[in-house]
Image (cartoon, rainbow, N blue to C red; front, side):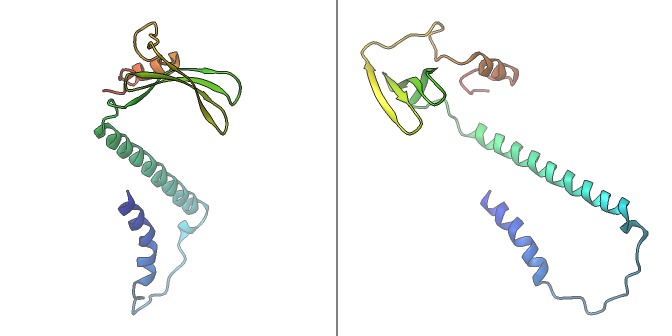
Length: 145
């Protein structure tokens, strides 16, 4: 990704560093320099930028599929909003579950559970919308294809 960034940043500089042409022919005004020509250039530039965004999104998705994220040591079991900035979060670290209080600037350990809390499905609680979205994308809620 960095190499692509440097190539795109260095491209205008390499054009400026090129030697000027020895002979310059007089340029006749073209009929397409009017409104239609400007609109065509605008649309071409827009399509180029949108195509680049889709290409980078596709590349990012491919890179993320290569790196597995299923073996995470920390899992969020459940989360409950208490207010606009305050939450209770039940986190599993290894084989231990910890209840955390999360606010705007702090995270506090409230309780370390002696016995693990089981959810209704026996797995981590996934919000209904996120679970449905993953089903539509053709993946299960653990991030595997």
